[in-house]
Image (cartoon, rainbow, N blue to C red; front, side, top):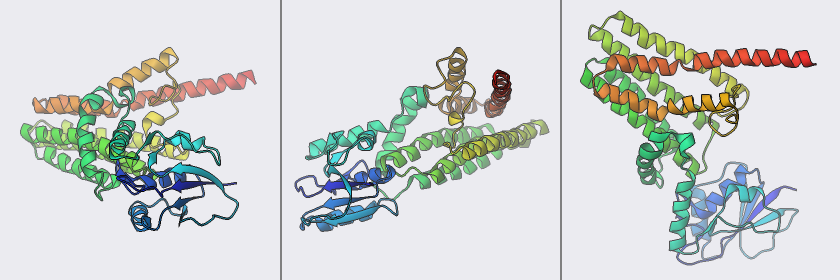
Amino acid sequence: MASWAEIDATAVGEVTSATRVAGLPLVARQLRQAARLGWSGAIVRVSDAGRGELERAITSAPPPSGFVVEVVGDEVVTGERALIPLDGRAVYALAALRDAMPGVAPAPAARAHTLAEARVADRMLYRSVRKPIEEDGVVAFFVQRPISALITRALIDTKVSANQVTLFVILLGLVHGAIAASGGARAAAIAGLIFWFTVVLDCVDGELARLRLQSSRLGQWLDTIADDVTTYGLLVGLGLGLQRDGAGEVWLLIGVGGAAASLALKAFLYWDLHRMRLPIDTAEYPWFFGKTSGSAGRTSLLGRAFYYVEFLLRRDGYATAVTLLLLFGARKVATLGLVAGSLMLLPTLLVHFAVAAWRRRGQAARV
């Protein structure tokens, strides 16, 4: 029997089920969570006085298409439905809803019956989308995330979507590439600063998507494309700029050739991830030593070694190092660093294939 949410939105006061907390009306957050869990729909009980406000709240942030929402009053609901009762003025953890049983109200992560409680729930939700330092990187955790949190708060109640932020990042990647290609150390320094800011915005789009429960496969692809456009746009731009300033044709080859080779390598990995229906993120690739994005694979000495190397070369610190080099006028070193960082996946991939082949031969021999 398919699960249905039964949301009690009848209570009135300084906070209602239509009150926005961390970018979503409380009722809309519960509807999107239920839809994400694969529930069939939701019955929302509301008083006649609050019906208009609640329906406007649902319309402003609707659940995915196909998810059925019935707004009712005191009438008896008929039909074979496994109803899970929810408090319309509360915030629930997705795991609690996943484990919920029909007829049994799950415990909320935070109640929002008063404005003070709503503010507590708001802070809790913002904390929940912040990644731990082992997943984010040192610079991201201590510097870039605090900046991105301010931007996210400024955008959360606007119509700006996470994908629109990502598209803006792609545009900035083309802009800073063009600036670097114009030549000169000052232009390269400006391009580096824009590059660093795109990494901050890369945090913003993810925070908006997670807070609004709008993560999607399209968003994953756009985010991946944005990372590559900003990195390789800067690399090509620096190569063109150095060549324009008389450093030699070799720098144009390094910039353009390095970007092309890196894109070919990434395209292979992305296609493999897409084929396996995994998130479009190289950290999620099923490497022979385990994934670098979580704790899996770090139990072995080799897994820990690869994890720490990847941690030190993570995008936040990598972008910061490149930006600092450009600010100090070291364009050639920054360009070589971008090429080296972009191609670091190649030896890892070659080792991965060699180890995978060795393991297959070992399994065949045991059979």
